[in-house]
Image (cartoon, rainbow, N blue to C red; front, top):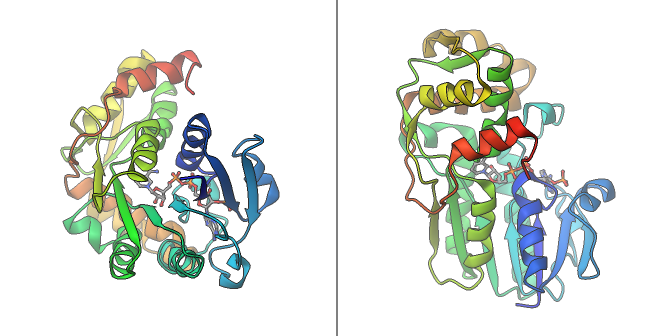
Length: 290
Ligand SMILES: NC(=O)c1ccc[n+]([C@@H]2O[C@H](COP(=O)([O-])OP(=O)(O)OC[C@H]3O[C@@H](n4cnc5c(N)ncnc54)[C@H](OP(=O)(O)O)[C@@H]3O)[C@@H](O)[C@H]2O)c1
């Protein structure tokens, strides 16, 4: 593989994918909506940029020219700070990635790696997970060689829990008894790069340890050196509190709906990673997180 297009290259995961591709001597084309965001993916002689918006298919014309493979880590962000952008998960994760897939096919791209998300049952009833599942189906039917990477939650997604614990605050929905095995995003990036040369259509990527949601918050308090103080909100109350947001900002509502699913069902994913969550929280505490 000589040239790889990375969509979502400015994101938490995409930046790590770009780094790892460059370390392997590959040329990388980063796709982003703005030059500033594209530049945040790094600078290198083997790195070029294409400025395009997945929700504007015409902007993708030529994006995949001379590209051997696409890795798409692009999706409407889960970051609360990005909620000013109200574009829905369906618009970006499903229709946006579909537009990129069509462009990749037109350009003769040999392989498409798509970063989806783990979670079954109640998870798949949420707009966030459903959009990923629907795109998986379109990818499988497209005729292009592909791999889907389905990660558990990234450690980066738990950084806010650690920041709150440092301030002596903890929050869970329900009793926090549901289990999951979050994974370091660096190891998910490794899975994405490895997928370029692998034939499996599905690569699941969970972390090495299974926690209840409450145990994750308690671990954050322990590493932060604070006494646990955890507020629990019943799922039904959480739904009532957040339902008005459906009218005000449907994107935030969809995100919170996913948060509720997380509190009502396990998401234990086959193990891929080896890095432990305690090490991640410790690096956050010591300012040595990379
Ligand atoms: N966070 C988690 O715990 C987690 C767990 C499992 C799976 N995932 C999935 O993994 C993927 C990557 O997650 P992440 O946390 O790295 O995401 P992130 O940091 O929120 O970054 C999202 C990326 O998507 C791009 N993007 C968004 N809308 C776009 C559009 N309309 N056109 C082009 N690019 C667009 C952004 O690019 P620009 O802003 O540069 O345009 C950005 O680089 C997502 O699909 C996510 O759902 C995340």
